[in-house]
View 1 (tube, helix red, strand yellow):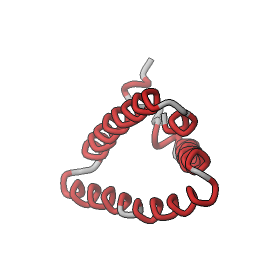
View 2 (cartoon, one colour; view 1 turned 90 degrees about the vertical axis):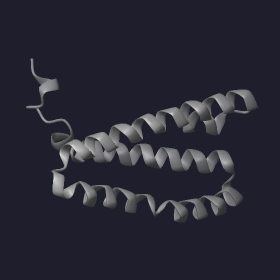
View 3 (cartoon, one colour; view 1 turned 30 degrees about the vertical axis):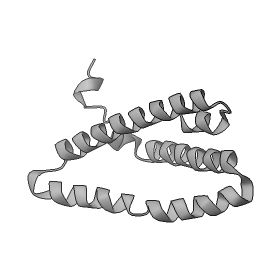
Length: 111
C-alpha cells in the first residue's frame, strides 16, 4: 500500500491508501506479537519482546535519513525506495529462513 501511496496524486485516494496501510500494519503487528509469544517459552517471553522493542529503536535514524532523501530525490522516490527496500529484505528473509518459517511438519501443512 505504501508503494501505491507514493504514486497517488489525489488527496482522497491517498487518505484511503494510508488508512488501508495502517489497518494492515495494525493487523500484522498483532499477528507478529501472538506468534512470538506462542513460540517463546515462558521464561523467555519478556526477553523476546524486549528484543522486538529494540528493533523499533532504529526507526528515528531511518526517519532522519528519509528527510534528507526527500530533499535530494523527492517524496515519491524516497517512499518508493524505502518500501521497495523493505519488500526486498522481507523476501530475502523469507527465502533464507524458509524451512524455519514454514516447517513441513506444521499442522497447517498436513495433507
